[in-house]
Length: 471
Image (cartoon, rainbow, N blue to C red):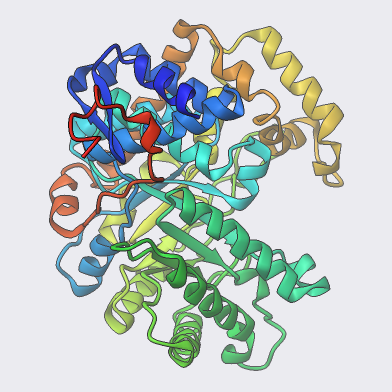
């Protein structure tokens, strides 16, 4: 790795130097140059040695500039105490054109001085987008460096979900797989984890406690597991979920049943910090409900229920509030409601993917090959009665991984136009969700300790690089 690391550092033409355990930056402006584009490309598409070197260097550059992976726990604890209010944190699933999309996010954030932003990827998305956690973190850090964004990066493992069918076949084995993923995520710099055991809720049980029992017991178990893995100085922000997205709407009574059982179970395991937020279901579904022509049906969002759930979460349990999933395909007029009713966080994904897939500058020939690939390789996604448009809309996300390199390599002008449309969308959302100006809240409540991702091999730092190296 020594030679690969030196070559990676050399991309910056002397602006970056190796020092014992990390790097120093002599000219930060060089990080906002095409050299970072090359380094990020190596972190994704290079040889194994080049990937390792590029990811290490991106991490260390993030550490010295301030673009460090961090936990949003401090901000959410402050919200639970009532020290901050009036905004809703967007949790953005960056699935496609990740580097360009993240750069667009950071440009919009800098323009509005927005700091309360989460970037996330779900267990299922990791697979079909071909983005393991270490790669995802490296690309996000690279995007922040390229845009001169130097606030903490809140990177989240979304829907670390227990699969109900697999749980029925092998309960401990399936929970073990979720724990294995979480360990990989935390090791890569995901310091925000959404534990999703809501798939285990059994509405056939006679009491709310019994209905939520497997959910809160397994959520507490995974929380304790996360606490053991935390790096020094980091309290991972953990979320739980009481209602599976797209299913029955959640109630305040269910929230109380879950929280009482969860707190009781976690306390019996030891002195562990609990969750900071709770995901609920109030009428949305992932990707929206697709009509026969491929358009999205109007969502009947129960704002009154969402407000009541968020209030109960804050006032009774000191959480930041409730989290709404499946929100990106809501009408533009809906987003201003979330901060008004003090929703803590909303998850946004499908619409950004749609902007790329449906963009008029996406080459027609690529569009045809994408559709052909989906027809040939994702036929199992088709449900009985689906029209061709319904099927393609729901299944085309499975093509993101196979076409990753090709989309990444689109001409600069095409990528630039798509990214500009994404940036306008992000800027609109940040305004509607009232996160512009939250940079001050991040600086006040979030502590992001410097961490060296891995010890630099001493052989990489010569006496010429570091006069004190031989002492």
